[in-house]
Image (cartoon, rainbow over all chains, first blue to last red; front, side):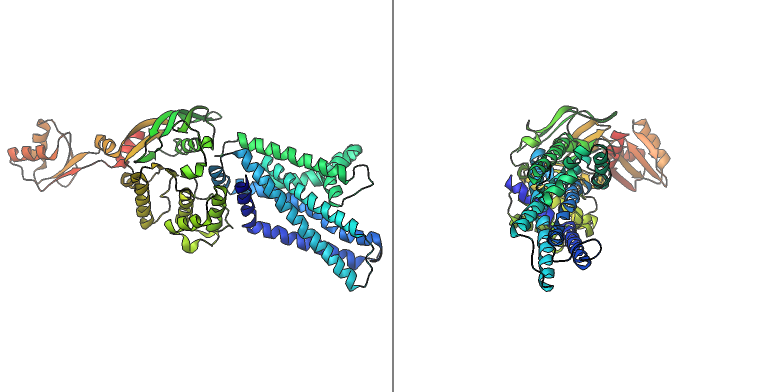
Length: 247
Length: 294
């Protein structure tokens, strides 16, 4: 299995798309941190010294898992789009094995994307606080928990996206499905069935990424539930690939 | 030394029958051409053999073993199905490194096959910018990566320049001579006539013939003798009387079937007809193919 995982990791690190995702993540997180810092103390947020404002700055990276979902989606659909699935299956005929290796590589890549977001978001926040001589009012434990949550949620988010991509197969349709699911279907379901809202994938991603506790569905429930979603759709993708004719 | 065994293979896609009860065996040590009109089921047969599609009935195997049952299949079977099966922003070398990693092959082997196919200079360029010929070479490099005993290549000569086609011919001959099993599909019939020792011809998913190239062209209607004479009418009468099929071909030329050149020469001598040309003409593989598939 290790050769296949290595092969899948090489796939992710030898295309420009991965670099673009890193750049988008860096620019997005950095941009949000800067905007929040600049507008701190204004109409919508407290001053920079306020623990709630600082917590918000440190959790900016929690948006990374949503980017990781799209990344995971592209990781498998680009194989189908560019027909590289053919040589992949000619070199490793075990299709479930291919999906498992791809899942492992996508988990690692998702986690790396989350780590980049944490480093950029946390690092920039620290720079801003030091530059403005503001005392850090958020505990190291809290920052560590949010960072770990973001990295974990990004890994699971990428796996979830991989599963969706493997099920839908068409690249544009798969990315569209992910966006419609997160931006339209989930809010609609949440408004119709409020009790379910916290268990929907986007909510679970946010809860895990921000390492929320003290809520009905906290991080210790949300993370395993998100993992279940990810494993379920990835299993579906593996079964679909196993049965499909590669023409 | 592996036989490729296609045994009563049938593949349906919905209502369409792509391959219909097809059976043939490809032996090692010879280059076998796989011919058929577009949509005749060649690619489907190759994909069934390589485990990419599931047959509706019958089997396609390597002496009874399916592709997915082979140990390290890429080390035993080298295949090229699509020239475009790579990510356009990835370099040719990285494309091969990925495949090599999956098969636990050293990076050294990647550089070796790049050298074999003549792509070393372009190895680090994005494969999306490759010409069709370079893409074919990249696909061939992937097929050769595991130094396999079986080669299955779908239209490998497409887009290759004359030097490339000659190189490919030598490569396939080299593999066949060392005992490899080589199955090559192509629609370039003149090229196939030079490359293949024997051919499998299919039409509408069914076997038309599996023969040596010489046997197929020898049996085709295109075999004839061209005769040029200043007295075509007199010679035509004499040849027809002797049982030959004679057809005027313009400008004093006669096209004679059912009689060989020495016999024609003797009849012309007896009839006192002067000959300016007496040329046996063999049917080409293209003639034979068109005759078999129309």
